[in-house]
Length: 433
Ligand code: AMO
Image 1 (cartoon, helix red, strand yellow):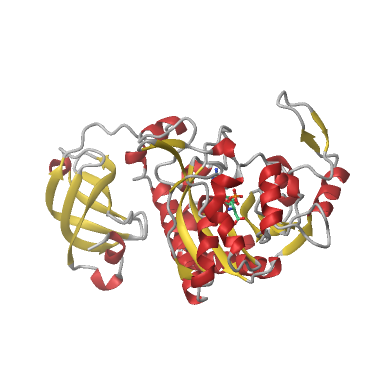
Image 2 (image 1 turned 120 degrees about the horizontal axis):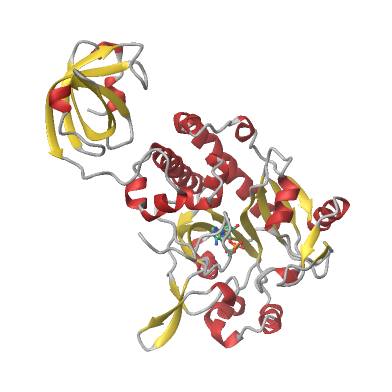
């Protein structure tokens, strides 16, 4: 039986057996109070004689058999087990993680720290996000596909590529499945994939990982408007279902879900130019030099983490910033025929300063335009031969998007550091444990 199943008035007075680990331990003269954590992170207090509990240490693995007792004083739900039999599987060595630990130690010992109730709560919320994300695509008739993670070309720019030795040649870890999903829409229609993407991010920020879970989608004949509708429906569906399913975990994390309940389509569309005007009116500056030199933000600048924070800090629902300049976006973004120089592209920014969680738009479908854009960005079109075939043989208007699961989980859980949204984070300074 699991801890939460024991907490039922019908079981009062009955005998149960629960297996798990010693989460907390309070030894008194005659009795000991063991807070047992089961294998799904549920906890229940077990009361036993001090003699029985004598060998126990934190994280020892045990099986407790005893009678269920309903007692309002018992922590975590008012039920406890009066232990008649204790089976010990393993007496744990002195546990390195106590109640107050540095963030660094918790990362060094992540293989153990994932037993903390905070990590368990976040991970359960993440599981719901993944499940409902998948479910939305399946319910709406998109087909799940998988793309390779070992690739030959850059998607999102060369500076964040991880290079690897692939037999006798060089290859890279995939930054995005996008180009492969684009190949699939010609015979499979709307497709989606969930896979790790890799970015050699040199910056240490609370929203960048070197490996993240990327939920990506691509569909033929989709306009920018179709893409944004799919994105806002997906994100709303995931959030509404997750906050229902994980109310207990969100409460444990002290996450006030008032704002999250309001996340329903449509999300506001803010043209890029208007976003720049808002930021200028607030005296916002852009960093224009590596040494940190700044000037007033101008039309044409990319939106930094700080500017996204500024734009969304008072918002209670996500917004789309629509129509970024081509110059700050990759080669595949389609130019807006009505606004030369701007792309048919949008980023979804989460409210309360959380910032970008998706990026998407229409793809350039003309062979000459996309080749010219590659050349302008210093990319060798020969390296993208197979991708260019997609523009040679039956090219159609199409588009898609990518959503960072960890970014979404960070916003839903309101944890500050993205490293806490994944069990084994990969960053510039960490590839272990
Ligand atoms: P982009 O590079 O903006 O676009 O990535 C899409 C989404 O992935 C997430 N993301 C990250 N999450 C954690 N750590 C990182 N280092 C990181 N980098 C990106 C973000 C981001 O919004 N192919 C395009 C998308 C498209 O147009 O379809 C792409 O990859 O949530």
